[in-house]
Length: 207
Image 1 (tube, one colour):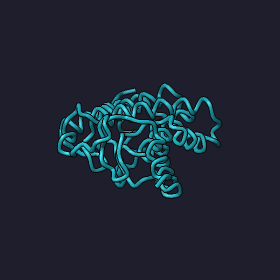
Image 2: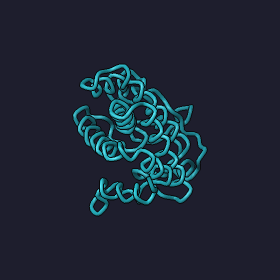
Image 3: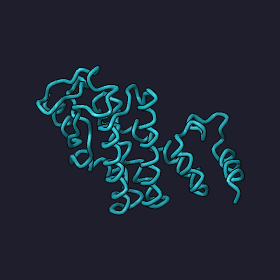
Image 4: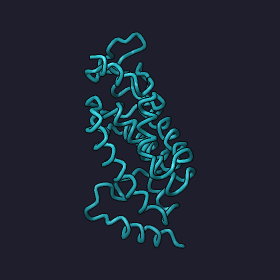
């Protein structure tokens, strides 16, 4: 099928006029994934939106520390997104979409575009890819009806990854010292670290 026809069909299925995540707002790798997976693209978009909504709901109900980027909700959302995607369209296709999304984040860093209030960096992308892999595995371990519960269990068991932070949301180095934002934001390689996803939850419960 001609590539232009594929894109035309894609525009129809995605409803670009009023959609926040329109085709042309995607990164080039994401757009190529969509064109290459035309028959599951609309379903994938629906799952993406659903995973965002569910993550917001769970974060509020579970009283996750109030951080958007690099925290528990971020980790939960990626694992849930990938688990739901993999269950619906298969692990291989889901993981490829996850990689395509992180390629966009790298481009966003290079062009100075922020995601959730901060520039992406190598640590954030490492975190997302790790949680994506756990989420894809969850789809093979759990039934479709229990995916949400399984992701929560992985989060509280420390099997996901988050950026090492204190309860103020400040990124910490290996010595538990706050890293000034100006020293890591805008630097692809920096001192930020990943830790098990239950580290801050335990600290919060102790206070």
